[in-house]
Amino acid sequence: MLLLYYGTIWVSKEFAIGSDDHPSAFHMGAGIAVFIVALVCMLVLVEVLKRGPKSLGRKRVRSRIVGESAEKREDAAE
Image (cartoon, rainbow, N blue to C red; front, side, top):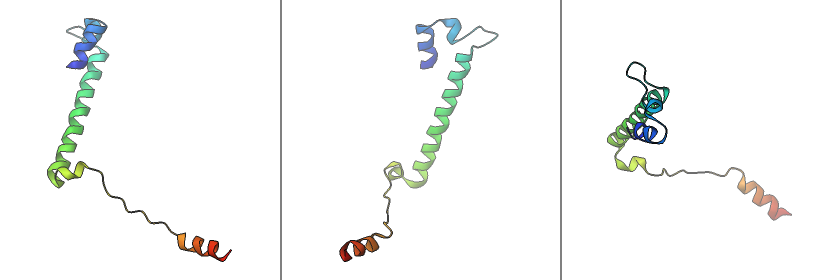
């Protein structure tokens, strides 16, 4: 709704909304954007309901350095 509102204010009603028979491409794009935002919000809601609110936080990642001990042994030998 805000996309259509600001499109009407900044450009024109014909650009943002179109005619009664044929909606404009901007109007169709705004509808698709609303659909995508609603879909993402539903996916986030499903994730929160499945795993709790902590599922949205940062995940702890364990990283392992392979071969570091061999490099230290080479440096110590020199």
